[in-house]
Length: 123
Image 1 (spheres, rainbow, N blue to C red):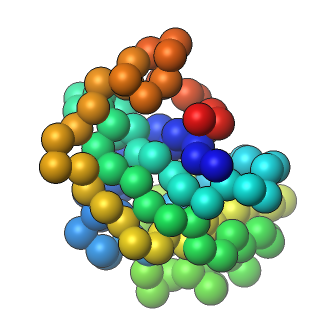
Image 2 (image 1 turned 90 degrees about the vertical axis):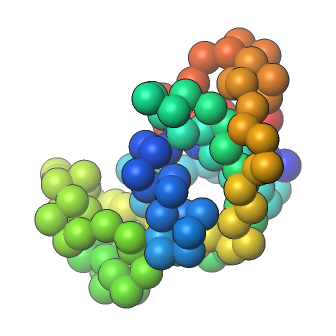
Image 3 (image 1 turned 45 degrees about the horizontal axis):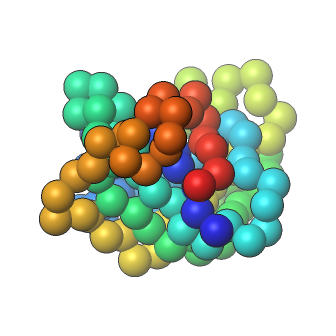
């Protein structure tokens, strides 16, 4: 099973160049069958640009998630702390085998509504 994640272009770029090996989320999909994340790069790109295989999903206090992921987070500690401010729980999806598409896709080609998900949606 696949999910579609909306990811800011600068973070998506780091996923596909290998410098960001974890995608951080405040909420995560519940279905254990999800094996692939399809990446929608938000505006100004506004395209589905690639996918990656889901590795380990780390769920813990933000400080503990940062401790485990900081070397390959692709973001600053300050950005991480701001993103998870006031949250008791943080999630990190480990990125395996990132594959940038040769040709990006329109969102409507992947998701019938053509509307980008706020967090994620199942495909």
